[in-house]
Length: 205
Image (cartoon, rainbow, N blue to C red; front, top):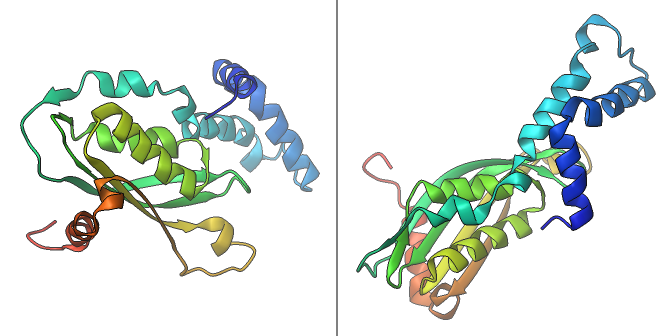
């Protein structure tokens, strides 16, 4: 989570994204040997500022408000799975994109979360400077805290531009991370059911 000083900086940037970031981008272009005033780059600093404002909008998402109006008391004790949730994020080490899919499951105790809220939770944490491992854990913990289920399972599959474009330059490599809480950690049968549902492809799903 962002510190108090980070939050203050983020609020300033959000209040004045062009004034906060655009001049820095303009200077960076010059330091790279480009001419920031040439036609193709003249508005690039402002566009980058606007793009970063959107790509880090998760810092300004109130998670409690996001889930609070979509919790429903219900007698249902079977697994709820939302899979193939697409996400895009920025690696905090190089500010390069990483992207992929998240699969989320939980075993309700006595209430469920509106299905559309699960992709919103993914976006709230993906739209921050991230590492894949933390992203996976944050999604799982948020659902655990919101729903108080018997257990939560999250699997994240991603490809990282910092591996594909630079460094080892492995364009076809991918990374998988998981977070298993409660019954998903304690019971192999529950984990196996989750994996089977994630890997199942049938009837157009």
